[in-house]
Length: 521
Image 1 (spheres, one colour):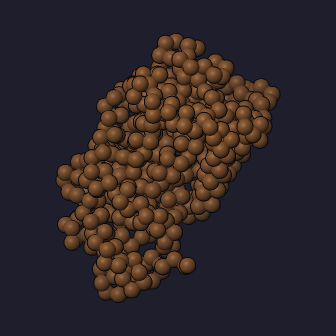
Image 2 (cartoon, one colour):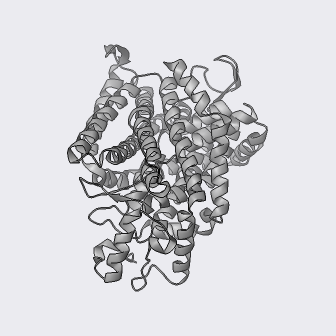
Image 3 (cartoon, rainbow, N blue to C red):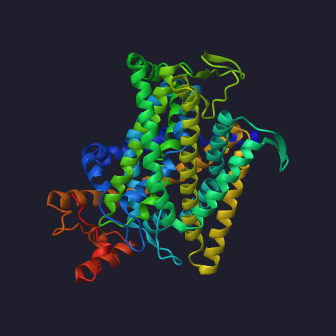
């Protein structure tokens, strides 16, 4: 099985996908006139505007759910793997894919908002690549293909990566405990105890729907990210004299990589996409659930989330590892041969170990324990985001089959994702990360190719960005001059939610609580 997974990875994550991710980011950066730079101030302004309505969540809650998916094991173990396999230069390529990917995140999340619809059971807003492929391209089969790939990736392949990282981090702090056989696998009692806690809390939240997920992540994500970054900054100040050297290692190794130039780009882009998910097609699901006045608003908010994920959290991890020297760089040859070896050879690269060792070198046992706690929150919220994505795509596939089929499909996803959390938690890291990479790669291929085709068929995300900027320049966003969006004005078809909303707005029938409010100063 592991051989098949590795073969699939070598095909999916060929240089073609690496350069497709970078090329799509550059293409949309140019087409949006580098929206990730020009409207950065507007991104910040939008974060705390608006509120949830009866059927949707607020912009900030959507950001939190999206960040829950982005800020996970990719930020702790993924950065370690990028350095361990690609050298310090891989971090530079993570930065590049984040900067360019912010424009891709804007486009895919704006498309999600344009073509969203209400769920047949809950009435909540649903949207994502499956919906915009069906409505913008008129190709339902492509939407079905993406939905199936998303359910397999987010419901089967990816949850195990997060759970595996949590269990490994806990075991490193508390020890393995007594050995025992569980479902045919040798494991320790510590791992089983931690797994039981994860499954109990996970079940409580995912059976509560998007509102409960949004409420949990709204508080958990900012808390864990800020605490993590704060401790990382303290390490940077402790090793202040090392900062120029670390920058030099990252920049210098980006083009003359110790592990090979191709390895630096490949691992940097692979782990960058795994971490910030720009172009993967996961972000639009949470973005579509937000209640906003104009689709471009949530696209801008989601673009900002890429910065938070990679330029802040991933960079914090990289500086911790590199400034403390707690890493190895794997050679191209057999296992155990290293280009750089600073720690024991048996320290697993595809795990949080480098990051834990970096924290421990400065904070002692507290650092080790803190990383275990951070990994738990990072990974747990990511599993919640994965469940939500799988649920949305189940809704897409079953919406014409009646409420019974939709409820059954969502129940099956809940059971499967909890099983995969247990399976991933107790299996080897290498195999589980390989499955995760297959899932990420499948979604990225389908989504990036699809949004590029949409650009040449129509330019909805680009056209409405200009519309939003024009309204912003004219004083839009105030209580007396609200943003409006009329899809028919741009020849956008099948945007039924926005068509109905605009009609109600024109008739003065749209309730105030469905409109974005001015923030309290």
